Length: 292
Image (tube, rainbow, N blue to C red):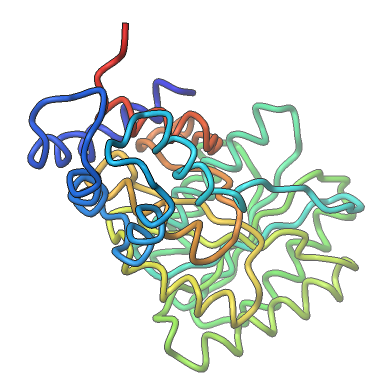
């Protein structure tokens, strides 16, 4: 796991080198400010972190504790539920929803669970086709309709079918139009209501997919989705392709929501459970020289 996370921070590490070409055992607060900003930690959070450091020289141990504190809300506790466990996947187009759904489905299948997919993004024909292709590749059943059909009906049919056939997990895709559109908010709220009608308590988990390459600009987007329907957890995609790894601290701190997984590549196995200790260590390895 650590190998994947550390590798995913490689571009962030390169960005840090542009500010401090050489690792040291300690840095001035001004240097740490430059490092964190270069890694795309939001300025307001950088100021909060620095204001809580009273030493003139910042060591690895000092920064370690401050960065961990920003991730205090990243722990997730699974709710009580009656199978199937229903997950609703939300996020804007291009964030990597479909690929992430396939990775989640592969993960559950490898754990020996029976998984069913619901192609609830009926706004785009390409989304239905892409998810259907993944379902075939993974040999997992999918409930899908045509473009323009009622996404709530797809959600209901998926859950109903999974219940009747004794499935363990249901993963439902949703449309990813811009979060500023009122019709998307209304559609997501309707899907939530219909899920609960199909299976009391569903969806048991609503997951927001955030594109890691967007960095801190994803925070406003995430807040909007959370206000629409309430988000239970976050998956950050494309972490391996960005120098903005530090934005995870800002996202976690601003939203106070658990980060469930990070996407660290294109393959189904490249969905890594988020471990705040390993993530912080991975970033600090790029900054500090190891002490003897």
